[in-house]
Image (cartoon, rainbow, N blue to C red; front, side, top):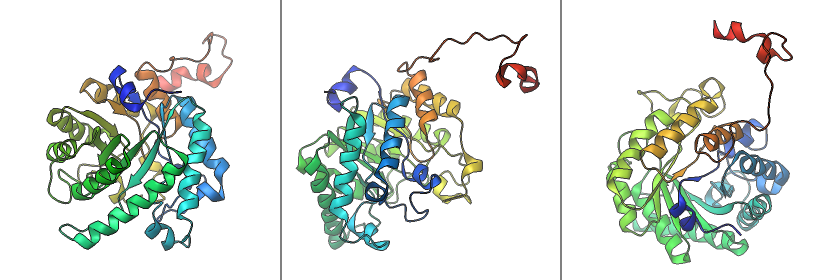
Length: 326
């Protein structure tokens, strides 16, 4: 069996997986916009194949597809009453794909129900988190990732519920700019989460590598615990540094796609500033994770020997080398 996430982090950088919902939307299995994970019960083989792709690419953790798998989001698109089925299926599929070769992380995310200084809204969030935690733990996860929180306050609520469940907690925030929606800088938010008992703090989604790197570097300087970073695979701008605000979101993002080498560069830079858990999020497919694995020394640069002969080409790679370099 794989070692626990904390044992693995003690030994060095852990490589996470990539993005699921947008990848499955590109393949035609979920609807752009709601992005709810009904694919877990409607098309389980599609999800299993994507998990296996990330595992083969080098991922050491498979995150269950339970993003937006809370009752309020599921009811929005006609899946009320399927909360238990979808969350349990998400863990079962990830477990099958992991095949004892990778850890399986449970998943919680922003609810869009949180309101600052509103006890009723906070209790509603707690209930939504508790329901998902209960059904995911029915099957069994190794730790929980609470992700993509725009409010530090909501992230703290998710952390509270994970700690009550007794499992290691990784909590990551998403940034639309220099601060969370409740006015916390990355360093301040990271310290709050560390102080509340998070084992791993960090940032994920929303930002591309270029805009995420200074955010996670600030977090690394602010805390002593493990730090995580999982950027999107889409290019952002200084004017709109988060991909959900781009004109291409949610289903015209192809022109914004980053190459595997840009994500590989990020993995190296993140490792060099002391990030402990590195992965991808929306837009990151198997090729991106494979390049990250190569840069981090977890995969060989080449899978097989190839005798290149530019004088007697046997492929377009050899035949058109001069044109590509011109």
